[in-house]
Length: 508
Image (cartoon, rainbow, N blue to C red):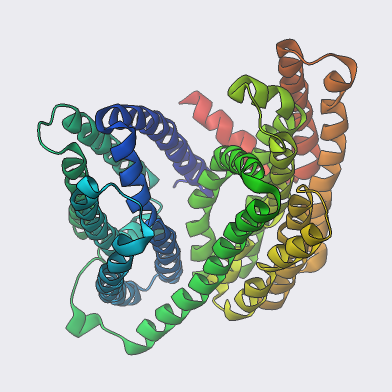
């Protein structure tokens, strides 16, 4: 039987492969469609699409919620309950898609009458694109139950295949517009709306053929109590996630108001670099999240906590491996990439990577607390704390503090304060023993970082900035990382699990 470690590593491998392929295709697609549409029409598509971008974030929240209930039921081994959850999810997402449609129709009236600045001869095309993206969003929402089912079964191979196919379809649409003789923007909008329909159709056929719980029978499998429970869970998750989104978006507005567009440009660069490095740890999280929820559903609380702490270690290590040499050599890296580096970009990027590194120490706590089920308490607290950096930054900037303080405050709140908050709820809700968290995870990670960072700094202290110094920093940091984290952070069970899994994969 396939072990948990092998399964997680295999699934993570599929996700990394998907990421590599789709990232390359996405970059090429953007180049093709920009040349095909031209800057003006591409800008219209991006602007109109921005009105619906927030719904993509909401869709992610719904996927996580539905997946949590599917994973929990999978751990319990109750097929009838899984069928109930699936049927309830189908109904709730159909209703949600309909509500989105109404809201977007109403929003479109205001959007095209006073908000957007679009040339008069392109208004019709922009409205067609808006309608297409609206339909696309509805199909995407209706895909959520199937997406969650595939994730609950940890079928990352199929998930990766679907992701690659979607990217190829988008590339095909881009090339179709190149050879089109009609309005390219209208054609692009219509064809892009077809992709979620194709995805929904394929995933629906696959799930109904391969997973027993994917059987639609509302008369037999409808449960009001389950519908209320899922709706409540979605509500609390949505409020917590929305406050986080608005809090982070508010920081950009505050930065712009007090320090101008140059600071915003630096903020955008920092966010982009952080997002690229986060991909490595996020793929691990996607692979391990279902296992944590299933363990809780099976009543294996001790295993769930152990997997949570191990997951925190691994995601921290993955992010530290790439981010620490990047933080040290950030001035040189940004100059190679951008040539003309905006003011603040270097320090902003370094600080946002530090914040994210701190956040990785509790990366799986949200998953564990969500698996346990009582999320209202932690969401009430985080809704409040998510706006603290905005308020504090406004006060500091009003007294003339430099822009860098926005990131210092973010580290203190989103990084350090959140460790205390989420650890408190892990102890309170999941009965995690505090000394286990400190002794087995937090202190060993701190000790490993205390060794790796000073040694990794040696080339930058002894040599002038150059490509050779960059290579030396990466090599020294990597070697120190393997020794420090392998021997200090990982316990004997984790070390043996990882090494045995790697050896098994190398023998294949």
